[in-house]
Length: 299
Figure (cartoon, rainbow, N blue to C red):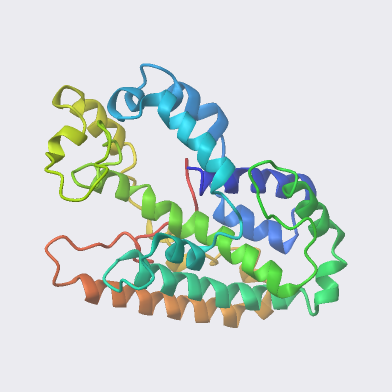
């Protein structure tokens, strides 16, 4: 929530305030923030009040979850904390069997190459970026949002804009779904239960533990299952990454068509790669297949 909605929702608000409807940066943000709004109205009554299903089924409860979010916003969230920085910080960039590393990096690279060509289509030089007053107003206002540590108050280079947009699109269209959606339902079971931590974690190696003591008590399991089931949302084919830019204004810009076609080809290859890699697994991980992955974030 902090890494995705807490970042992407305010950025979209500032885009609506500062960028014209025809602005290319706003077009990208709107496309990938399709259903990512209303968080501040939805969360208190359904998540963060005493007695809600989350309060009863999460080990931390509502109060502990709010405290954690506050801590995480203040100490961890940064727009410079992209996929590569995230992998290194978690120590999984050298673990090739980690699903998120090989699949996530392929998706990130495909998005990055597309965004490079997208930005180049609208900004022919660094000076063109610096002279875009709407873009600079958007950056300036985003930089004032308290949780946006390291957001540039000015964007004067094309490569800086590319890096920022790649990160934002990845948050909405990939990272969110690696933690939410179908993943939420799949992760309800031990040892991956999000609602676990009903007792403190061990403080030293070799301690004998009973995993059942950490997870949701049996008398709360119906609440936990019901909460997780809310996130099972099958993705229509026209809302997956395979058709992400098959609509105006992207189809109206002739210079973008080669980049869109190249992205589709890469996504198809990634989809086939993941399918092949997971074909022999007892529990295949298909959450990041582009054909199953929404291109937008949701609440």
